View 1 (cartoon, one colour):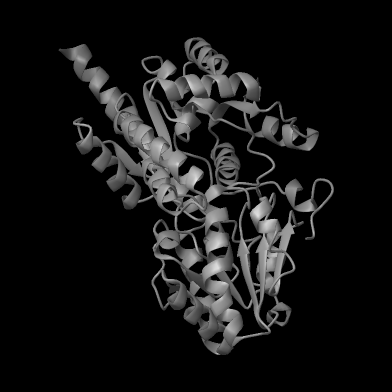
View 2: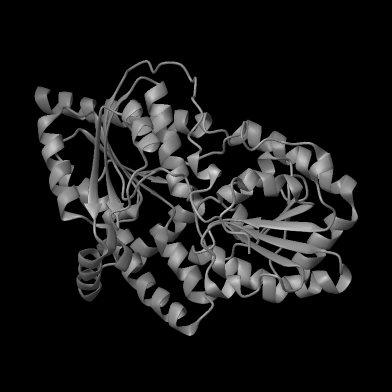
Length: 444
């Protein structure tokens, strides 16, 4: 396994400056989050960092309040970038031991483990204090883990946006079915029950709930019905995008025949489940037909079960690499065999942006909406998935055609600026509604 001993160069990457023009009405925003957005090693970190860049480029004023779980230090260059993008930067330590104790207490009270783990009393108190001291137009919380902090500022700001993004009810339900071990499946089954009860209600105090796609909305609406509460009715869709300048097509001569690549953080449960399923169920079928085929599982922090397959049957488990784009550029085929996650898959967008042919599960494509057989191939069962990969390995012309179409699709629909401009329009709409209600109340 090729793992970096220290911080890889790719971890130094910052969002590229955006030039979307200044907003018609600059806003003052309290932004709540549950971990450091830099380095950008996860999908949510990637999105939060790019959203901060967008808000800055549009001329909005942002106070950013987040946690540093485990006391992880912020590198000086990352702190400098954040300070250049926001008015006030507040990073609160979040030690794991008291966080685990709070998570266990939350679990005993019927709340989801991850909500208890990343709800910070200090963050809740500081959010409330900031909202009292400043005249914010809106407060925006990213992910369900920041919901309790957002709840503390309700009534102190005109508009509140809870960016759930993906439905954890849907995510944990899928993990309860597909996780590798019995213990994990049992944990996710219990977490799913708690999460469904929590998600069915947590949206109610806020002005808007931001979700990536319809599947996420349907999952929460179903949870509402099952728990006998009003069905969620404040949803706006706010997907994210991909850096099409960094993840751009490269020289076709870099492509290595027979190389299949999967990217992602290899300790994230849905990625681990997907990689193990592909290795155990799909890869033997591919190797039976193409003995020269090679598989690269590319991403940081691979778990022991993945490290164990490194060097076997043409498989390389890379660990942290300087830049995943370098591996994507070499791929004859990229795969996204995700079966458990909800929301939007960055790994799929990145491969498509680089004009690489992709085979993915329908679940991986849910939030993206690429057209099967035009932008990518979809497959769910092992035999079907292996056949799709083998087809593209054997037909470079078709693979190249899919890749070209995929790049055009991403450029039209999945740049960072497009979804963020739509989200900004929802900010204005919600504010106009809130001010209209205030004027009506004043008149009456």
